[in-house]
Length: 279
Ligand code: IPD
Ligand code: CA
Ligand code: CA
Ligand code: CA
Image (cartoon, rainbow, N blue to C red; front, side):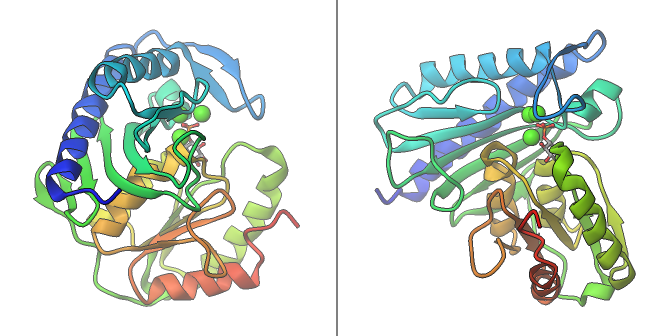
């Protein structure tokens, strides 16, 4: 289904309103937050506020968009009939949130998948709309397919093309312990070839930082659909290239985003290091 600019704009408005509302809830709950459970490793935590935020997003979407599907980090896939799936991360950066350390966000996106009855996959979906809200400082990033990306209403543009050695690079490591040794080795290879490396702890805001010029490049292995759905569209609409390795789409195996020029250099190094495999 092709969507008109007005239809895309309507989805962007919903994404932004919901990310703000859930962001306010999460930020109010910051003071007495505790760990509810652990996930892929003992260090991969989830709090009561992750569940509360996702519940709020699902309730609002059921009211506003009853025929759409919902894919979120903390609850099971909810199928729909419209062909549109909302992909939500109720708190992106839970470890930061728990520690009261720098950025976390609520990420909300609307995507179109090839099969409306199953959870869509970043390798094959088309993202239509996305919003990332950062409650700490009230920044609201949005994008609509073909409509550009904005921060608090101001149009976003990536940095001008530059070489890898002059690039500030963001990355993340996920919480799957078995991958971390490999990720450390890749950082060791990259560090001498770039301006510097940052690890902020919030994938969606890393992608927004590329869009806003706060990073030249970003790469991460292990991202899940909700980590990248909104941020990848925001980066792309701001002029970033967002891909995987070896000609593939951005997905769990690898997400690379950044300014033209440097992004090709980074991609070919990551390919030569087999950064999208566990070997
Ligand atoms: C995590 C953050 C982190 C990234 C991890 C994600 P969560 O999301 O985005 O920056 O490195 O891969 O899992 O679990 O805090 O929503
Ligand atoms: Ca998590
Ligand atoms: Ca996340
Ligand atoms: Ca999360």
